[in-house]
Image 1 (tube, rainbow, N blue to C red):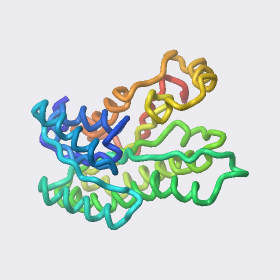
Image 2: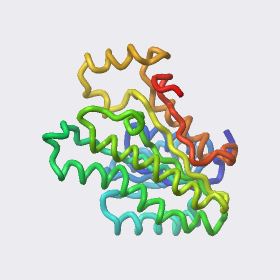
Image 3: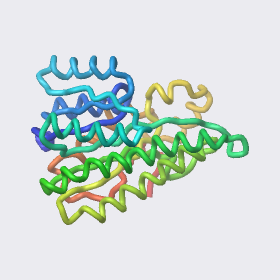
Length: 248
């Protein structure tokens, strides 16, 4: 898909999982990648992998829980590449616990990483997009932000809030040819889901019409589309990548 060729994309949580898959696919499609995560070693390895395939990628170590670091990183990306076209807010964490036992710190940490960080990153990145009158913001939410999940009041709330943020931003910047959309993965095989109990996984698979878990590549393809020129008339949308588990 040529719709991202020559664009500069910043991906958070790029060192592994869905973020890594998104970064690789965007790079293969001709985008220049600013790779952000806390693990510099993994970022450098990914940047090397992208360059080995003829692409362009650079590591920008970032803890999205730190506001000053977010601002400094976005400035560094624009200084390095001259612009910022695509923002993929993928970084996320879980701190699961039943509501009666959930500690305030676990609530705060999840909200800070999964919702406040995308707000701050969007705020920092939007200036470049407004200046050039073109931009794509893609937020990785979750099916649990749509239907809730026991033991994940913090996670589900953060992901539901991210959907609201997506729509609010979409309305604010639409007149400048900037779109904001969300991708809501269902049950995806990642390091985060690998630790789930086998019985829990089996019960989920029974409810998926396509009868299989999703892959990181399934999500990455959805992200690449929403980040592309071809998706220019789509904004404020939540694209479900869940095998049909949630319809309607």
